[in-house]
Amino acid sequence: MKENSKNQKITGIKNLKKMKPYLKPYRWSIFGMLFFDVLSLALNVVTPLLLAQVLLYFTDFNFEKILYYALLYLIVFSGKHILDYFSGLCSYWWVRHSAKDLQNKVIVQYLNTKSSKLDKLNSGVITTRFTSDCSKIAFSLDRIFFYLGRAVVGIAYIVIAFFLNVYIALYLLCSSVITFLCIRFISNKRAKFNYEKDKKTDVIVGIGNEAMRGWKDVKSLGFKNSLSERIKGLNEDYSDFTIKQNKKISAMQTGTFVLRNIVFIGFYILCGWFMLSGWLTLPVFLVFYMYHGRIDSALNIWSMVQEEVTTAEVAAKRVFELLDEKEYPLENFGEKSYEGKGEIKFSNVTFSYDGEHTVLKNVSFEIKPNTMVALVGESGIGKSTILGLISKFYEPQKGKIYFDKTNINDIKEEDLRKTVGLVLQTPYVFNMSIKENLKLAKPDATDEEIQEACRKAQLEDFILGLDDKYDSLVGENGVILSGGQRQRLAIARALLKNNKILLFDEATSALDNKSQEKIKEVLFSLKKDHTIVIVAHRLSTVVDADNIMFISNGKILAEGKHKQLLKTCKEYQELYNVES
Image (cartoon, rainbow, N blue to C red; front, side):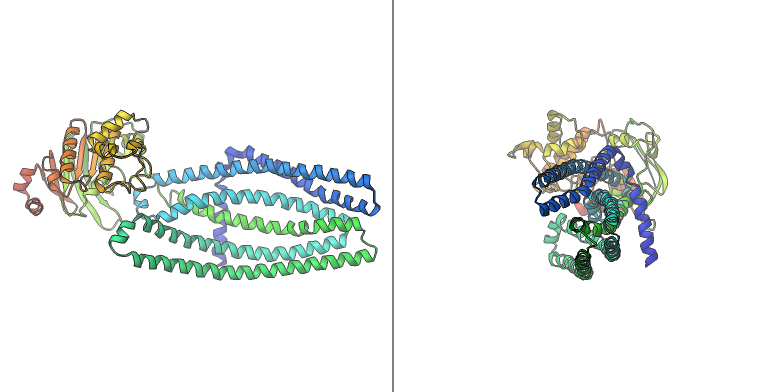
């Protein structure tokens, strides 16, 4: 167990070092924070001495001296708080911006991660690390700088104390070491507790997100109670764990507080005895009185530093896991520029999602530019997988894919995304206005281009019927839209992007017959400028396609036009008859 903890700590320290690039742009802000903080702490050392002088002259009723040192104390004390203000400004600047930069890196890295890895990720894990952990690292580093400055100044308190009275200084130093060891022990326990607590939080946040996103399925399929019970069980386990651990930590903290109070009482008794014996004067006692808490904190601050380091280590380990290309491999793209005609070629392509169950087996085909090709067959036989491979969401284990004789792996990502556009069966619509959703595809799109895309996608009449027209908010995942309207909005996005190759994965499945016929007209009108590949269960959508590929058991069983397949492919004929 100790070995595991040690390994975790070493890993965390390595991860903290990875924060350097995120702190470097704000090094002058960090330097400013430390500069103002050090000056403030230096004044903080002086203020007890000045206040002791004020109290001393009270015994002599020397009003001039009292006024002089009181004004000097006020100036120094006010200067300290002005320095604290500027230190805080610098601190907020670099903490917020470094956390922002890290969050930006995490989301970009996440979106560049291979689809095969994203398929297995829990969104709650990513959400927690993106929001909480990134901020936690920056905030903990800020606290580390804060505590380190006070720990260094604490040494100055101890040195001054030894000059004033060796015996009392030794007493305070020894008692501080004892409380420091107690607090350090508690900090180690709390760090382990926080690591386990964060892991449990990830699970709860993940399933909670899924429950909220999939609330329609939860209600309609009647597993509201079972899902609620599962979340309830996870929350009860989390509560039991946190209550149990907090009880232990609270008990240890209470013991430490009692010990510190005993130490303070001992300090007062020792100082009283020294004063009665004539070994301690009133002014020196007043300085010790104001120093004793700071001397006690000097060593304990090192424990706080360790606690913040551990907190930052845990958060950094979780965040930089996402940035580890071995754990989260990135998509690979080439360096070739590409402006193709839209020709697609599969050469002996074999693909498996998990490395065990083969979805496609030595699939080969060619799709000519400016043609409409349909992929049909039963569910789960690889139709959508082909679209995923054309989009380069996945890479085949064997075989090659070409666009106009250019290997897809050699093409730049930017050119590939300009070439291929995909409309999914269940497209995601963002919680923003209709216009903003469309501008994601083309940020510089004009209003006329947006309106034309919506007109072609048979969406314009619906939009014009809304109160805010194109500025209407659609809610999370387009909650105010019907399934067909979401698909038509996704089709409008693809049309606005104007990709050379357009892929439609059951993109008309949620449309009524009238809308489907209109969309079919749109797709056929696009054929003169685009290569169109459609995955369809409803054969009526694709009977007029230039080529239909019937897929079965991961292979192309037959291909040709609709009438030709009705004569030559029994399986296609059966599928068509069932639909008819």
